Image (cartoon, rainbow, N blue to C red):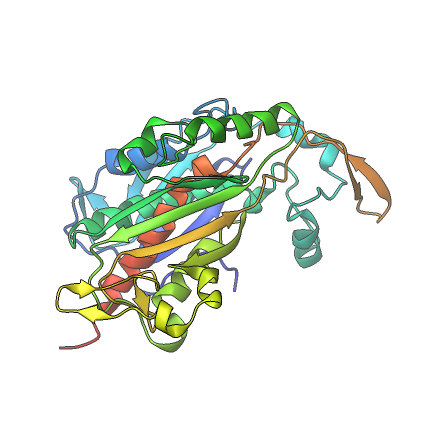
Length: 351
């Protein structure tokens, strides 16, 4: 088991490394007859690609997608859909000094412990660049979900201790932080830039809201909808926590305060975040993820080398001072992959 495949019916397999020739994805289970063009994929990849502002990595990648199979005359054929994204601006020389070192906060040591070999050029398979393939797959899932009217929207909820208080979804793609709060965008951007200027990075949270999911999506016991969404989000390298609805705040409440009551017109409240018993209840699905600071910083740090000797580490290259702005389309993509899979699985639940 290599852990490169996600999903049951809508099955996504990614491949490629940060500094290899290309990244790619193969999707099984895409129904035939779905209208799909490279533009559908590219618009999502353009939201994730690097070099969008001074607040993101300055690596310049077009992230131009190539559809290799599974589409004929702009319609899916029902066979395996394969897509490729070539790497064009990888500066592997920036990592030469790290060949013998385990970078603090990275997966270097754990990968080496597992495989006894590692790709030190940008982290290889553990790099955030791997998410480009996920976004390509998510674009296909979004097209499929459009048939059911499902809408997936994510935004930066907080940067450091600066929290958004408003949700103007039209504003998200109009600011480099991708927050939905026009009043907090400036302060968030300043916090990221301050971290960058101090050769550091900063963490934050991303919130995702999904509307128009009908009641009944999700599987009982082990494959609960929230469990699959949690797995999808925690499979992203920088994500260290997730909560649905009221999340951890529910632990401070009484049941009389936390229970969601159904009414003839829907739900009176939505403390559960749209999922009960692991199955969607028709209310808006709401979850938030905690994103750690980018571990690649130019400050001197203490680590050990492959001989277990203490050494100093300086990480050069081009890295995001905050991951949240570019994480937003990735969160949407992984949510779409989960929901597309659940939608197709749900078609087998009853006659």
